[in-house]
Image 1: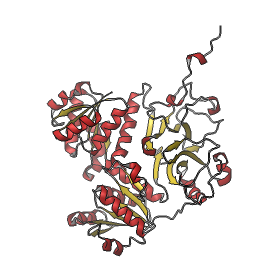
Image 2 (image 1 turned 30 degrees about the horizontal axis):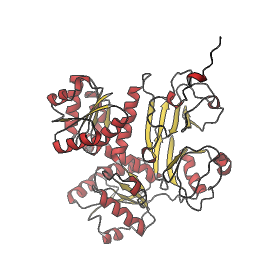
Image 3 (image 1 turned 180 degrees about the vertical axis):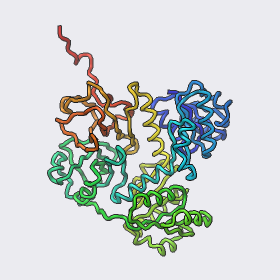
Image 4 (image 1 turned 90 degrees about the vertical axis):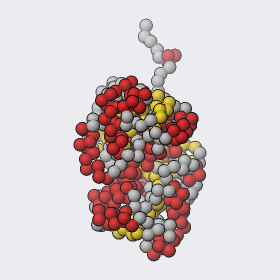
Length: 464
């Protein structure tokens, strides 16, 4: 597909990188020639120097023949104007990055009036993920499917867990819970487990379960599951604002403290977030943090605009307390290094946005229509979790899983059928309208049919 990305910032560069790796023809547009040159050299893609909100620049980028245009500059109004011009000139599908909370209540109107295919808000998406992590305080990452009906949860296996060494096929019997282990990351190795595999200490394990079973499984696993009652956030930006809003909307019994050094920002937050405690002060002041209860807090979120500061704050909080740690990282890409640090759950807002757009682009590629409902990158991008909607495909529906031939590295994790959650067994089948959750180390699936092993010519026998 021909895709134009306007804006070479963190989000734009990440999107161009991910989409380029998936084999699309990418053109990136930016007014900063130095930044643009870096993107072109680093990604080996086409670059256009100019203002993406100008018709001449879009024409030079090839908007007439583009399939998708993504406007991801730092200015919401520029992004909306860019999408408007692109839609009029090229009639391509348009995606706009809109961050300002003032537009939150008008997103539906803007989407309809500008005929946008999608509106992305990295801050809101990151806040939603953090809110889920605060609800599941023992998890390192929580990915939700089918609007929260099913959760894929990542957790580290404790050294003294009683479930270590037990074959996975006996898990349901041993725990009495409907839980399925979907992925095990053991050092550099990524494993889609079978029934004879077993957990080892310090494994990074992903499991899928209904929300009602999650806390019970944590207890069986030996992971502490104490609800978060007090949370300290350093950094009063948009993400913190959205977190407070989500906590209020979910009616969570949680006391929230937000620390920020900008007095005007604190005054604004105090006005719009009356249920939160807003503190004007330096978030890296050790004495202030101790005074505000860092040693006893249940959760600590480092959400400043500086990666290095967030890393140091989380390391400090982890040294002083047993708090649930959440660390926001925007630029630093050394995941193999940060994974070794005690940073708790690391949030990459740009990656969250990239996943949602990749899902949309893959759905466009599918000749049968939109099939990919949800997509998450797992294990540093080495695996994926996808949600598909089952269409009327005779090669898939009403055939027992035991009779289907799946590719290596594919696991069917769950079926959602009329709000009922099914943990699939060999005798289960897919039906039209089902939502099917797949975890795979084969990245790049666009269609549910991609999970099937394609028969070789010599394997096909013809009747004479």
